[in-house]
Amino acid sequence: MSTRMDGIHQPSLFSSTLRMDVVVPKDNRYRILAEKLPWRELGKVANEFRAKQVDLNAGRTLDLRLHLGALIAQSMNRWTDRETEEMVAYHAGVRLLCGLEQSSDTIDRTSIEFFRNQLTALGVESLNRIIVQAAQEEGFTGTSLCSSDTTVQEAPIAYPTEVGHMKKIAEKLIGIGSKIRKGVSAKLGRLGEQAQKLFTKIRLFTRGDSEKAVSQKKKLGKELQKTVAKMERLLRDELAQMGPAAQAKYQESLDLYRKMLSQIRYWIRTGFHRPGKIVSLWAQDARAITRNKAGKAVEFGRRWIITRLEQGYIIGKVCQKLGSGSDTGLMPEILDHFMQIMGANPDLVVYDRGGDGPKNHRVIKDRGIKNCIFRKGKESLPGIGRNTALKARRERALSEATIATIKNPRYGFNKPRAKSSEGCILKGQAAIFGANLMHLTRDWGMAMS
Image (cartoon, rainbow, N blue to C red; front, side):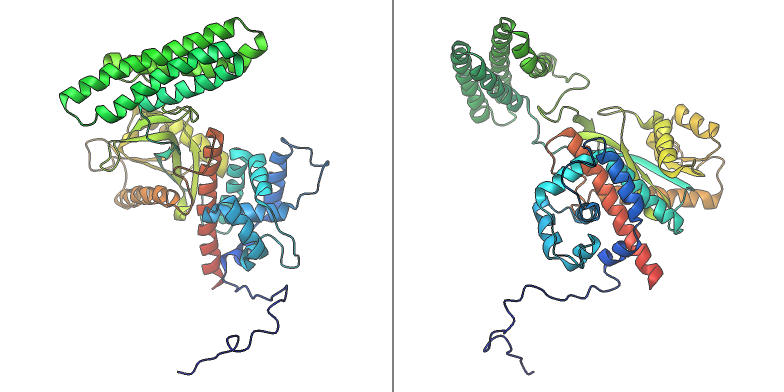
């Protein structure tokens, strides 16, 4: 086979050129989205949410198409803000999506983050509603099916341990003390050293499940809890002698530390966790949710309702109740969310045996919807024809696949890159948004071929 050596022996005479012509194929997903997305509706919704945060008529001009395109591309690929910045600058398809085919403009990562935070989770959910409605108008989905289940969005936190919490609380208390007064800072420092020694002993000398190791761990754990609680009381007493401004600044943090230390003391004394136990210092709405699955008995995060629509499109929301809870009373929440997004009640509701409860059945009956909630201890669905029962079983299996789709690392639903609870919820909605965009792109591509 012959070989071309152009550019090897003789460097290109145009290597310093600043521009290149790139052909984006018709079946490229970014070109399909650029040509077919309802940009006016997306822009209108984006500005409605931005107007709640900033004055749209003041300050620098924002290229809305550019920022929406960057958000869409990022949601479809779980790029970081830096990666998105590079893709907008150098990827021909992404530049077409952002409306930059005739421009040399680009975007920086701080603008990407700022725009995303302006939209909030509710804004991204509203954008997703437009995508689902666009799919509905094209005939790719509809309102006939509501196949729901709950899942856990795992919080981006380390595996929570009581000893680790107490160590972190001690460090936080020392940090607050150093900002208040030198005398109390010195006292907290001495108590902090004791806490650090106890923490080291627990980590190094209580390993294993032997009776001696467990007994020693409990004993040292009690001492550590008492030491950290003493630090909290010392700091609280010191703050009580200061002005209202200083108290207001640190009161919320001290209340959180006291609550967590109380929960830890209860666990040390009884061996059981209190309901609603806080498992993270910063992700305070994350909970330990029992799943009883082979891979993970417990997951740490927040519960979501995920609903599969016709042909695999997805809508989802955070459960109103934090932590574990029964699915037997979730149907009002599911159907209200379905009505909000789709504008009508479904014809058929599918749910697994976990939703078999009188409240769910009553709500479905009152709304005149066909009930395909699987019954506990029964193989068949009463009052349902064979074809409908087969469809319900198929959709029930596909609901699990839908949850697996958004939990794929491509979309970043689980353990998202976020530093706040609000950011985690926003990333969850962005994962659903990205999955629906990929699905809509495939449907549009197949319709064009």
